[in-house]
Structures are given as structure tokens and as C-alpha cells.
Image (cartoon, rainbow, N blue to C red; front, side):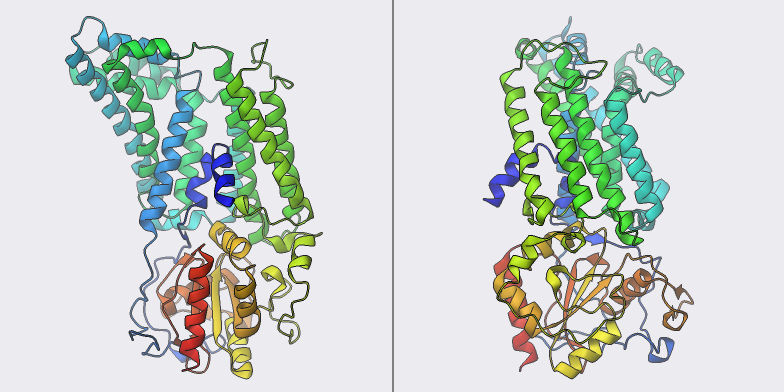
Length: 548
């Protein structure tokens, strides 16, 4: 059933595919050199892992612990997001009317083969222009800066404001345009013949359509950059431009198909408005990231869901023609596709409502603030009915800042959790997580509530949750000085450095099963795995290795 929901709501959430995919979230390691931390360097934090790993295959913990690579899945998600964004851009008022005009230019007075070659070159130049734009983002910011964007409070708040501006633009408050002299110069150069003329025609399309495509491109680049993937912006732009380029080449090859396209009209502006609602909805995710990282504690799950319910409810009302903007055309009747889309949107709105009382909303749980920020939560109360969690041994360090999901008895400090595991003679489950980690929230909402998994987390393991993106200052006594001389003065920096230096990874979520007495890794660490059976086997194998 959950897959059916995802298919139904996929058309609403296309902008966020790159965040909700199976990719891991990355954090910045600030040009970290992977050298061994010696005991005297940090007397208040953690020990260096021993040189042996107790597993089927033993490896040196001073060497990187291999974890299945998620980079390809990340880039695939970004490409799909970009391609869907390009398809949406095709329906913008700035681009759709240009299809017949541009295609007629290629086919007029040319044989079919030559017309297609020229249109194909035109499409290739469109792709080239946008891919270069994506590469420029990587070159300007750099790989390390791209990694840090997803956890930086200033950038997240800037992205929130940026998406709100984009939404206002789509609603018709103003148009985001480039200087007219740029467009004029590009258009003048497009009169040249040959390949140069085709290139400048493609450039003219990119500049003229910027008022419509700019917000889509901006959103795509923000999402691609915050995944931390080095080639993310370029891959996103490739998908976007490919979706734009294909129709021009195909219609040049089959010009008669142009007659089957719907006529331009007010429906094109409706596409812009719908995208405006989506931009506004996804802007809230970036604001939530800031709220969580800095512990403002005012933008909780109920407020987030309340705003989403209003936004998507208004979108459904708009699609029914009951809400109009100043630049909308009069709607004499509702078309069947528009009616079906309004049904999907309003059904999605109704689906969100139980979340106000704690329903997990697993289809969109990755985007929502954590379940533990819910003030009135009937779901967790019902989940724990009849279950006996492990006895809480008193207040834990940093418990005033963090709250474990599902009311688990988690620790938030490595040293404290390690001592508790030794005392209880239980293996450790270290969960390297983050406030901005959408895959972490998805694991906690979709996998951890399983009855068997919850029992193991609660009774068989000592759980340590280490937030690698938290901005809270640590006590002076807890400041860690690395061998490179850097002072790790925040909770997030401290645990990010621990993960990178000790376990040679910087992705979240990252689950490590550890023997607390020897600090040996019991089995191979892993990242997000939404198959309950796989994660259950991971925990069971850890227990077997510990009890050998």
C-alpha cells in the first residue's frame, strides 16, 4: 500500500526526489586528514578503535570501513528530479508557446533529415548550456562547501527565503528576469548561420525563459548541492536540459505531431501557480532544518503539518477554480485532467490531517520534523502499549537538547553510552544521525517501529544517537583538539569528527554495532536500508557476533 501512495503523490513531490531517495546524507569534514586519534589528544571523549574487527572478515579499523556506495543512487535521484523539473518547465508560459515557433524554423524550407540534424544540435546546445551552469556551481562552491550546505543554518535559512521568493514569483507577485541587453545580444548573434547561430538560439531560449525556469533551476540546484554529491548540480542540469531538448528534436522529426498539442492558454499559468504552491511547501523543510539544528523548538511537527495542510488544501481549491490570482484567465469549466489532479491534491491533504495527532505519515515522513517534536502524539503512545522499554537509568547528557525517537532510552554522548553498555553487558548501536537527514527520519518512522526491531533496540542494544550537524556549543572541558590543531567546539563537529576519523565515513544515517569492552566493530556498518527484514538481520547478526 505504501508504494501505491508514493506513486499517487509522486507528481506532487517531484522536486524532492533527490532528498527522499536512498542516498545518504553527507556532512562536511572540513578537509579532514584521516590520522589516528591518540588517547592523549582527547581525554574526555573516545578511544581509538583497535586494529581488529570481529566479523566474518577481519580488517584494520585504521583503514576505511567499506560501506556500500550510495553515490550512484544519489546522482540517479538528482537526474530524475532534474528531468521531471524540465518536463514541468516545458509547460511554462515562457517555453510551451515557443515549441511550434522554434520547430517551424527548423522544418521550413529544409528536408526532413537536415531539419532533424539542426534540431538535434539545438537540443545538444541547450543541454550544454545548462550542464555548464551546473558545473559552475560546483567550481564556485567546491566539494567541501557543497557538503556543508545541508547542515549550515545560514544557508538553510537563505534557501528557505529563496524558495519563498520563487513561489511568490510563480504566484505573479513579480517576474525574475535577466538584464534585457543580455537577451538582445544573444538574440542578435542567433541570426548567424551554422552551428554558432544554433548555439546562440539555444542561449536565447535559456535567457528569455528564465522568468519561468529560474525558480525551477534554483530549486533544483539547491537540492542537488545539499546532497553533497560533487557532480550533483551538473547531473541535475543534465536531466533538466534533456527534458527540454528532447521535444524540439522529436517535433522537428515529426512536425505533424504538433497539431496534437493543446493550444496555449490560461492553463499554462495554472502550471506556474501549482509549482508555486510546491515551492512554498518545500521551503518549509529548510526552515525546519534550521529550527532543529539551533534548538529554537518553535517549528515543531504540528506547525509544519498545519502549514502543509493549508498549502495543499489551497492548491486543491485553486485547481477547482475557486481561488484566482490577478493574472489568471477566467475559468469557464474544469477540464477532466484538472479535476483528477485536484482530487489527488485534496486526497493528499486529507492524508496529512491525522498527522496532527501523531500518525506517522510514512509516505512523507522523510520531509517532516521528527516524531518526537509532536506535542500530542497518540501514535507513539499506542505503539508502546503493552511494551516494556529498557529502564531509564536517569537523565542522560544532552538529554535537554535531543529526544530519542519512539521514547527509546538512547544516549547522546559516546563516552556515557559506552560506559552504560559495559555496565549492562550489551552491545552498542551507534546511530550517526543529523537534524537535516531525511533518510534518518525515514528509517525512524518506517523501520524502527517494527515490533522485533523495536524490541532489539530497546532491550538488546544500548543505543547512542550522535547528531553530526548540531550547532550547540560544548562545555570547555569537552572541547576536542584534533591532531591537525582544530578545536571541535560544537556537538556536531565533535561527532562528525569521530565518525570520519574512527569509522572513515561521513554519511548519515550510519549504523555501527560495537563491542563496548574492546570497541571492536561486530559486523560491517551500514547506512539506510528501508527493508525491515534486512535491518532486522543486521541487528541479529550483531547480537550473534557479540555472543560468540
